[in-house]
Image (tube, rainbow, N blue to C red; front, side):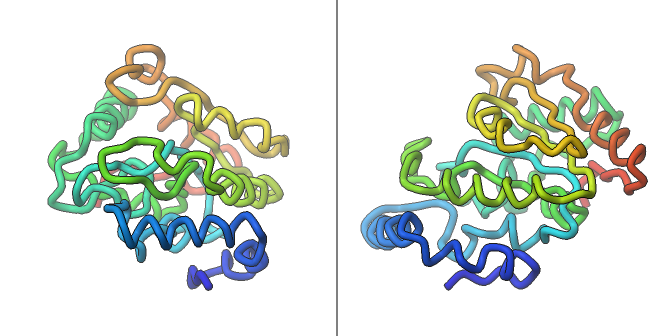
Length: 223
């Protein structure tokens, strides 16, 4: 059984007995036993542990975890303190600086301070084989993360969804509650950042939307 330590426990209680999840769990048990898989098993659900359903105000959707040693720890785009931020995260910091003037140190990439403010840092797929991006795609995680997004879509407190890249935009159809806002653009990876991520101003726009709905803005400065 999976425990989050917050309101997600009740909301997602029945999900782990469904046939697709049982199949996914068996697959993951074999993968972790025979290959190097990221993030570490105990970190898979950190996004939901750090950011409760009730506190979620912004959702950033990633693709799948970083597949390099020591990088992934269950929050999309985040790396633990002491790990050099990968290029996508460096590009996120560049856009934050251009958009808001906030400068985050490019040698530090742990985003837990965002998560604790209500930014759900969710990948569409929550595990990956070392050195093999998208290697756990299609194994069942998409069904699970669809459920998470569907539950958030039911909230009547406005949420800002930041959908970067094709994998994230594929979830857009689930979000049809008019109280929520979807902001889409290219992925921040070096391959696509210049195709619309740079200049998207999603960080200031998200805060403008939050303030307009009576909510506190996100402090994008890492703590």
